Length: 500
Image (cartoon, rainbow, N blue to C red):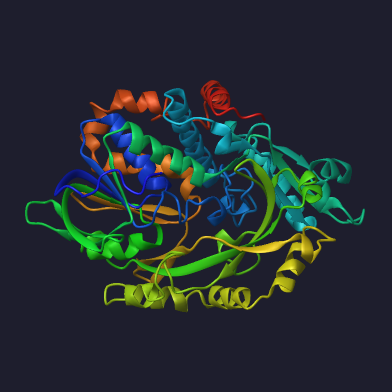
């Protein structure tokens, strides 16, 4: 991708998108499609799209469909399983697949197998208690149209067929249970983002500025936004005004949102969490593990730290990934500054930060233990999955930097906010995306939320027909509509060349 397709930013744009990740690329593509006359600029501080959270090895690549993530289906006090969150996330991923299919159909992006591949999603649990939970979860989930076809087994022969690497050296009397969903996918969000970026650079009038960092966002009296932009290559500063601003800058979204001084940003704080994977390229091991397998999180661990052993398909090459292991850095981005965390603390969010820390001391202790682990200790964790894992087959790879969002809470001062959140001001002229998983998988849904909150009249009227062309099920619920679910899944399977 060229370093820049427009040498100097104009003084005014209808829309400015900050960040060159999956969110801005998705919103830029959608807005250009909905109204090609819009004057749109994207500012990305690094030299190419998707260098941070959207990069392939900076996330697990799970097309989050809630097929295997057990934290999306909590067990209630009465013993029943709550699947409403799982249904929502599954619906949201179906929306993403529809939009990507539309882009493929329009020839805006090509070779879908470069960014999405079929990969079964499995949940695996150990012991009688968790096996009973998984059985009840399977029974409840398969009542929903979105999870029809999910298989359940406790049979060792069947498990050896599904996950031979994990079943090797297991005792016959060990109690295990697993569910398997063949509709699962592995997604390279970096490649997908760059494909959209290439389309925007080459075939649209969207102006893309790489190596350009937005440093400050200030409201103007006329309702527009004044942005201070730094050209990091030529060390020039530019002033740009915009009618609408979207902050999709990963960990840097929080300080930029704070600089806007909108009331909606008050009380938000962030705590950076980095991660590491154990990765294997050994073809013998890979041949024995062709799935993504998630299990239960340990006590006090955050949802994003659920242990999983995954097949990854990146640039046509298969690998295995195990983790994540939490790390710590005061940076908000991998290529950020060590001053990011201390500089983010202010009078508006210090109560939230302290309250969240005080009420989550076990989480702090968990993170400290994780950071202190050496490679040998990480391999010991892997051996809970792969009994005879050899240290020489695995290497440590640093994952992306995340900012755990902390929200104001009247009772506790502050609380941790897991998931993905869109923050919009009252007039709908600025929006920001905060949070992490399921993040990239639900980018299309999240950007639809931005459109609905910031351009409600256009969404209801002049843009409605085009949105339905891009996302045929828009406004409909799949969970209780068997015909529509089957139809849309067959459509996306064909367009995205999936082979489940």
